Length: 59
Image (cartoon, rainbow, N blue to C red; front, side, top):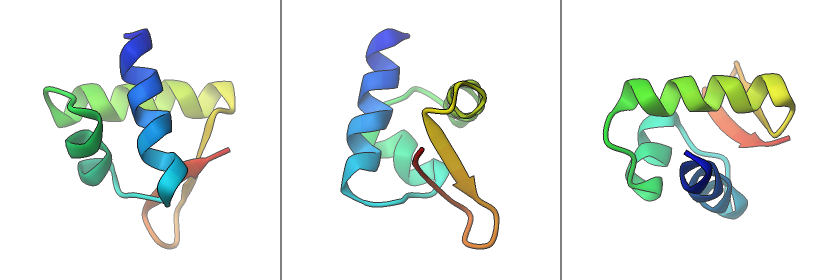
């Protein structure tokens, strides 16, 4: 799980992405696991979600 977090952060360093794009770049097995991890990371303040564009970005 720690490696998945690192992969997500590495994917977001380039540019803001949608959840599906993050899932593909971070090599996560399914979209539900990706969404769950993104929400946990958002609660910790590591990432933010732009509701207007639907993109995740580094917080």
